[in-house]
Structures are given as C-alpha cells and as structure tokens.
Length: 257
Ligand code: NDP
Image (spheres, rainbow, N blue to C red):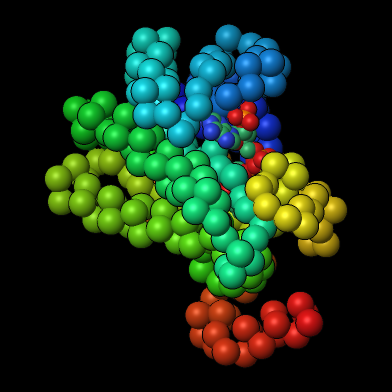
C-alpha cells in the first residue's frame, strides 16, 4: 500500500496498532499524532523511517493544522487522514455536567472537524484522498447507557461524516469519506475515560482484539466504502436494535437491573 496515512490518537490503542499494520512489510508511510511525546516516539521508532511523529492535541485547531502541514512537508502529500483520537465518559444522563458535555464535544467532535478542515484543501486540490472518522457502535444503540454522552457525540460524528460524503459527491467525487464503527475493543480506552465506575475494556467479556479491529480499518483503506463495523458481532447487534428497539432496550435494562 503506497499511501501516506495520518493517524490521530496513534500513541496507543487502535491508532498505534493501525499504524503498525499499515507500515508493516514496507507498506504505507504513516504520520502519527497524539499528545504524549514519549509514547508516540516509541510507536514511531518501531516503524523506522516510514513513520513520522508529530505531537498534537486534537482539541486545538492550530495543532491539527500544523499536523497537516508537517505531514505534507515530510512526505510530499497525504492520501488518507484518520480521525481516530477520542475519549469516553461514564456518567448517567441525570448527572452529566457542563464540563462533561464540553469535554465530549471537544475531543470527539470538534477534533474531527479540525481534522477534516485541515486536510480538505489538499484533497480538493487533487480531487483525491480519503477521510476516515472513527465512531462507535454506541452511536447507534444504547448498549451502555452510562456512555450516553459519548455515544451521542459519536452519533453527531456519524451525521457529520455522511453529510460531508454527500457534499463531496457533488463537488469532489474523487474524495472518499468513511465511517468506522468499532464495538468493544481491548484497549486502555475504558481506563482513559472520564466519569465514574471506570472499567478496563481489556477485561470485558467478548472484547475484540485490537489487532482484529484494526484489520477492518486497514480494509477500508484498501477498498474504500462509506462505512464499516469492525466486527460482525457489533454490526448484528446494531441491526437488531434498529429492527426491534423496544425488545433490545428491554434486554439491556434487564441485564443492568
Ligand atoms: P485509547 O484510550 O487506547 O487511545 C486513545 C488515543 O487517543 C491515544 O493515543 C491518546 O493519546 C489519543 N488522544 C486522546 N486525547 C487526545 C487529544 N486531545 N489529542 C491527541 N490525541 C489524543 O482508545 P482507543 O484506541 O480504544 O480508541 C480509539 C478510537 O476508537 C476512539 O475514537 C474511540 O472513541 C474509538 N472506539 C474505541 C472503542 C473501544 O472499545 N476501545 C469502541 C468504539 C470506539 P495521548 O493520550 O498520547 O494524547
């Protein structure tokens, strides 16, 4: 895969593993972005000169614009931009604070808009490129009500992604826009979440391995499509919820009782 791929949230978890899979065997060139310099450098060092790390806080528009500039300076172009950085929260709807809502919106939604706007002029100039936004199965079904604010913001990302796709179909049909929806993936995501009753995703029954989840993301780069779930399991759960919401909500509630 001779592509230049920018991945945000690449110091750990899904982003780091995706970068490893993309660069494996002399494949893609990857530009890695996250806040923690040491962790980011460790991932980049393992990938040799095909990787380039740029310390970036995706909640800052200026940082994300700098990331796009640095990526183009280093490799001459960007082919794929993955808005992957994100953070969860565990807090019941009744107890959400203004700070919680602002944090979710900033890290999960504004960051995606910053990424899109930073790379879009470059993609438009060549009428080519791919934007991949990482959402969540929780954006489509209340499987974990305590993650309501997170799922709601990821739902906003879904509509933003679809709207951008339609917009570009009209003006720049060479640009692909893809939404990826993971289910539970065994990363430190749960530990990094805000809120109460933090769980370690890696210990949740049925958690998908990070390697497996990333294969689905690498696949959508090789064969672009509008959207993809990382596992058949989460795709089936969401499809069933959309078919029979009351039944599934009843099942979720009885598990939580
Ligand atoms: P992790 O918590 O393991 O990793 C999160 C990554 O995002 C880290 O590299 C972190 O790096 C980075 N990050 C967090 N905040 C910022 C910031 N402000 N600026 C730049 N980078 C940031 O999570 P996952 O790898 O599991 O999650 C990746 C994506 O997948 C997220 O969008 C998440 O919502 C989504 N997802 C995950 C699921 C799961 O079960 N794991 C399920 C569904 C969706 P650093 O701290 O160095 O900045």
